[in-house]
Length: 140
Image (tube, rainbow, N blue to C red; front, top):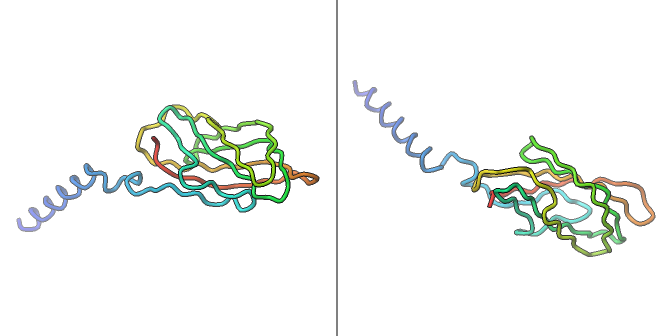
């Protein structure tokens, strides 16, 4: 009988923690940017995903030459991939604000997301190169 009450209390506490969102990854997920070794990672707050599915980002060119971006492929949560075939030229040490870069469709507000980006570009006088990076955050 004593074990029964103990198990019941554990179940009630677990249910309360679930209801409070303790086990929801979105509760603990911060905004981070990783990768982007050549072009440069966007700074904190330079990307967002809203509940309508619009993904916005500021891209950088930290290379010593201008680049021509051929395409940007974005994958949301290892599931939905959208490619933007915009052809844009960026000068050295410049930024490009893409609003929206792509649209992933309706998203749950407050949920955690991870977007993997693959950027295909050509530096001046060079060959096509690929830059990859990941940004994470919460849906606004």
